[in-house]
Length: 336
Ligand SMILES: Nc1ncnc2c1ncn2[C@@H]1O[C@H](COP(=O)(O)OP(=O)(O)OP(=O)(O)O)[C@@H](O)[C@H]1O
Ligand SMILES: [Mg+2]
Image (tube, rainbow, N blue to C red; front, top):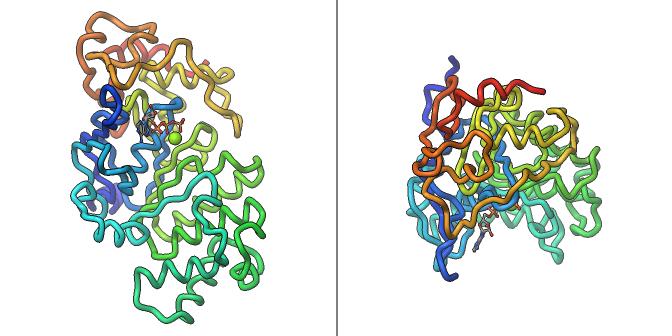
């Protein structure tokens, strides 16, 4: 057992729920998600489109329009109660405690300022330091994210950089105020395969050098296996299974995880392979069934699955599945 296991987790999310109101019926995008992320740990969120991965991530930065969003449960990050924060606290929290990188760097970077100016501005917004000092830190950050000729590139505008360099510049900007938590929503899908791997390796190195905790969303199981310590599988706004990357890929126990992995050629872990859809469609989030949301698509489902929420079953330390039939799935879970 290492020291990290004795200190409180950096992220402590308990029974988090997020509903969007404003439509005819509230859309339950996230229903009772519990997730803990330790310091220095990398967690991947995977699952089909619409399963609530982005909403979960955006809630950690409180990026939803407050008026149309109903939040429930508990979310502590670095000892701060995120759901209770007022705008001023949030402005301090975003960037300094938790920071986000997006799939498209051009959305995070301002086209009319040089990248260097944006990093300097971000540092000086959060801290009282001189312009020269902030510039020196920006230069260090560019070196840290392995941007060649960093001094010259700090003076470049976003459109003057290649896709891969822009991604690195965005990561530098996200790290400007030394956050402890880096959130990444499909950080690599917009890039070609070689650049993708380089960015993933960079994230991994930064995580080790800076002791960052990372939560990232991906459709790429190969990427999740390569970069993540733990994987959480989402379905219809719930985490249906979580465990170490290895355990989850080699011994999945929730029928949805099994189907997800099976739908890829015999469990092959080829990089860049995307999740293929499973027969049937996910439920309407404004009319969730009382039981397991996957029951309609599940070959193991029994009557009980349709009437009650399956509790989380602990299969091994840290490996949990929300399923009543984990006994039956045990046989099916060995890779084909
Ligand atoms: N602001 C919003 N208002 C209403 N519904 C929303 C809002 N944001 C997300 N949703 C709905 O919440 C559900 C979960 O969305 P989310 O973006 O988290 O999915 P995802 O798992 O990230 O999918 P993808 O893999 O396609 O990115 C979807 O049904 C989506 O339409
Ligand atoms: Mg998404």
